[in-house]
Length: 477
Image 1 (cartoon, one colour):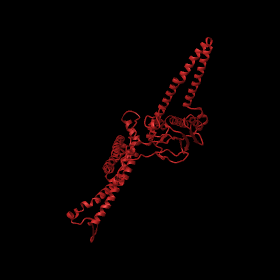
Image 2: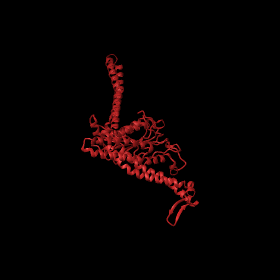
Image 3: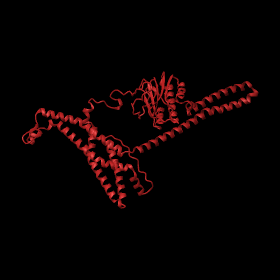
Image 4: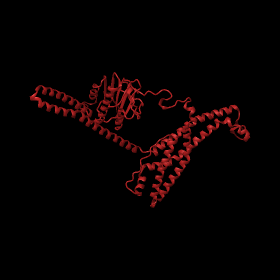
């Protein structure tokens, strides 16, 4: 494996963390404690700039708050257009179903709603930073306009777009009213000390009227009341961005759930991608086996046959030379047998099939250049495919420990957590592991991902290194 490790490494933490205790690895059987990654320090950690003001104070003047407020303001007129168009087209189409015009009108309305949904996804991407993929395209069952109309009417995505157009209007009205009221009252009262003089100058009253009836009126006109009004406005102004953010959270859910691809379609795309990874991996393994046979055992066996032929010719003329050549051929036989054993072990070791992960991993650990503690805590054996992936994952990781880690000891832990098989390889080497694209560990992560597995790397500079593989548990037959 060509992966670099430790201080020479280019590993990088896999982006899809476990979701339970990420970015660290899951709990190991030794300490059962979560181990998170070491966060970066300093202003540049994580690529984020450190601010002097806390988020609560700078939120009203941040660009994000104004973008979200703009989104809420635009939602009302846009949702009115969407609602009116969707309801009109559905009503007209349903009313015309008794004639031949109803189906084309309904199909045109659904297709137009899909187009308006693309506009909404673009608006959410620009103003909310929400990147929602386009839904799956239409798949007509044949050529022609009728087939395309049938595909539009059968598509669940089209009807989800219509549902969005109908449901978004009441929410847009509510969020518009709340956001505008809080924003207007907040900034108006915050800036009241700057413009309260307009009331006595142009309105004929002392200030902003707080209360009034036929016999009594209360105006905010003295310095104390003006100051309290500004402080209340400050609270409103600081709270408004978070209220608007909470309102746009509902919009995010609606856009993602109704205008994006369905879970089934996303899963199909994921499985198609995983199938491609499996096919590519299998082809690469076949090429590797063919290369190893051609360049290794096959070449030695050819040399062995030639050597035995020469020894046969020398047998009568020079028995001592023939004996020497036979002795060399015997050494070549031993080497060829060892290469064949290694090649067979790389395909699928017999000890794994016969005795399971505990014995197979112990065999791998015995060939490592550093002492390795192996602990397998499994009541039953997983499926053969999952067992094989776990074995080869540990094998590759221990090869890197031997070659690049500079470790003095390592450990391998295997255990089951609910419906997942967890494999963890740790060492006390120099650390700095980084699973960047193109590295051997990145390829290993791709293989795990093809079976819904996850690879997590926790390797701060200076060590120790902990690599955890999570695989789906499937019981053996």
